[in-house]
Length: 80
Image (tube, rainbow, N blue to C red; front, side):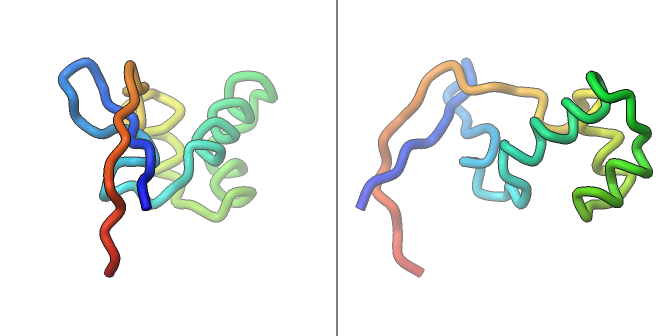
C-alpha cells in the first residue's frame, strides 16, 4: 500500500503527512479561518476544536504548521 507525503523545498515531510503530526490539515485550516475571517479569539477557538489555547495561538501566528508542501512523494506505507 502506498501513500502520498507532502514535502517542503528541502525534501522534508510537512503538514499532516509528517510522522509527528497529530492534527489534520483540515483542522489547522479551520483554526486559521475562524481567527482570520471570523475574528474569534484563541480561547474560544480552542474550546470549539478541543485543542489547547497555546497550540491554537501558535497555529494562528504561523509558528506551527507554517510550511506547505511544494511537491508530493509516493511512499510505501509500513504496517505496525
